[in-house]
Image (cartoon, rainbow, N blue to C red; front, side):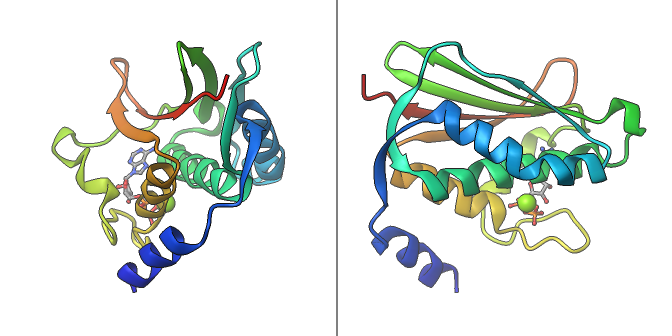
Length: 166
Ligand SMILES: Nc1ncnc2c1ncn2[C@@H]1O[C@H](COP(=O)(O)OP(=O)(O)O)[C@@H](O)[C@H]1O
Ligand SMILES: [Mg+2]
């Protein structure tokens, strides 16, 4: 199934378009706003003041952002509602567009920082363990990179880097 999914994703020609990564983030946050309210999670955005022009597949990049936000919502779900927050930020760094999604949850055990991207790896009772695998496949199809880290003060942060077109 995974191999089929992977080849599907690979062969499906990316619906490449000139897009602003900031727009993808704004659209996804809008799409998920009601879910965030229902789950008592505050979604904070710190969007770069300059455009982040990239070539990419809008729907697939929304899928990436959705997966990362949904995971972050799961990560903060055991905290009291007033503490549940997720921060999305975008920035231009030289020729690279950077997106980071950080949460204030328990973080990721350091020895699992790579395993979490493996198909079927899940620590959730009803987890499929496919979200991060699909996410990484999409980012790599865009010639980008994704990494997971723990923040010094707790919580996980996922960083996505994509080449800017100008
Ligand atoms: N923000 C996060 N904080 C802590 N752990 C995370 C976070 N995001 C992902 N993980 C870990 O990575 C695993 C795999 O995530 P994913 O591939 O999306 O599958 P699923 O969400 O179905 O478990 C999760 O089960 C969890 O252990
Ligand atoms: Mg998930």
